[in-house]
Image (cartoon, rainbow, N blue to C red):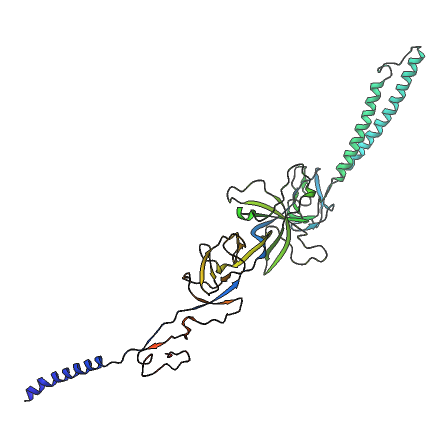
Amino acid sequence: MKLLFRILAPLAIVAGAVFLARHFVLTKPEPHTFDVPPQITKVDATRMKPQSYQVFLDTQGTVRPRTTSVLIPEVSGRIVEISRHFRDGAFFEEGETLLKVDRLDYETALIVAEGEVAEATTALAEEEVRANQAVENWRRLGKSGQPNDLASRKPQLELARANVRADEARVIQAKRDLERTDVKAPFSGRIIEQNVDVGQVVSSSTQLGRAFATDVMEVRLPLTNQQLSFVDLPETFRGEDESGIPKGPEVMLSGGIGRSTSQWTGRIVRVDSAIDEMSRQLFVVAEVEDPYRRKEGSEGVPLKIGLFVDALVKGELLQDVFVLPRQAVRVGGEVILIDENNQIRRQKVEPIWSEEDLVVIPAEGAGLSAGDVLCLTPLAFPANGANVLPTIDGITPDIEQPGGQGPMGRGKGKFGKGSKGKAKSDSGSEKS
């Protein structure tokens, strides 16, 4: 008996478990199901309105002086004095004496030249007397008519006069050389490099130093072929009157010096004669007046030579265009429009200008019209005809969702549609 019980007891337990499992499976309640309502995406939108847009061309360049000069003396000699403004980085004014060459030899040359003038003047006076005496002797001899040039000593008189003029020219040259012993600044500027100092003997080919004018600075700015179509550049041919030609576009320069960023205003004044073969860009030159901010009312740091600056060239003023944020334009030049039924539609557009954060599209002929509602929210998979809930310029329209149901729809089964109960929600469906 005990052996039989040990054999039948496990079998009875297994059979009972199988029976209970089958009972639970057959008598399980019907699962609770819901109708999935249509998904409506909330998006931000704006209504298209034509407007004007000022184009600014973004470019960069390096500051350089408009006028740079190598200072060379016009006389030879030993430097005896140097101005404190003839040092690296020093400023000087136009006409200021930068250095002096020893004057002694040139003062001596001037005295000698003046003596030669006095001697030549005396010789001319004596020759004039001889010429008059020769003519008088001609007449005393009873000869009629005018004496020839040799008889009247006309060649000798002209030679004496020429000697006087030559000696007077030497005096002028000696005075000029004496003045040139003081090397003066040809313009108001700043010293880049000083090459000589006191005691050094220089000649007319010695480079004293390099300097640049501080009245105007230049910046060469490259423009792409696309940018050139949105700006009017000053182009004049030889012989044309430049007074009637409008000035070049304005340029706003900005650059960092130290921990601060400064801005300067300039204007395009000329264009390079050829397109750069390496970059395929055209370089234009912008001039900045008063770069050192010395005029009354000017503030800020000076515009330094060699500074790399960002530039915004004022371009064309576009009329009747739509200015769209960059995120509203999909890859491939598509935008998403929302119709009066709050359904989306993909539309191809043709931009005429684009920047980092915006795209400009003409109001006519580019696929958009005034009054269209543009979706501003990026959608991963926008399908034509999909429903959205737009907030147009900050206003959300009061609309009813499709089917007149709440967000969860109607229930079916045990707690849905049937005799045992109804959903308790205001929309007629049970909330899970």
